[in-house]
Amino acid sequence: MTENNEPERRSGEDWDWQTETREWSAAASELACFSLARAKDKDLIEIIDTKRGLLRYVCIFRDKNQ
Image (cartoon, rainbow, N blue to C red; front, side, top):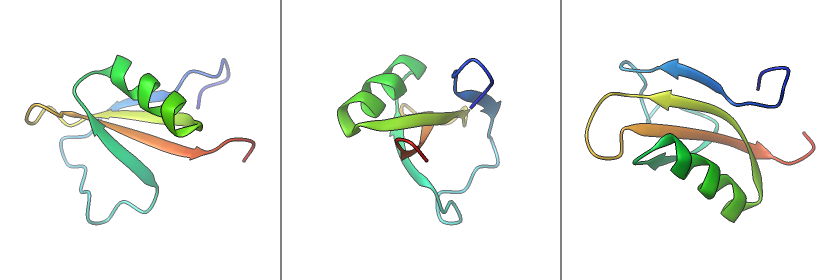
């Protein structure tokens, strides 16, 4: 997360779901990442744009207060 509690954003064309160790979900838009975080009661810490497919955004979460 950045200093103002915004999730970090980066391009992740090389992102690999098999090697990712953090909790994540795929989404169709950045806005959907925020909705998923709220529904899961988690903090959204990073949004990765894979630029692939319909669910091109990867939302990275962590437990609240970590």
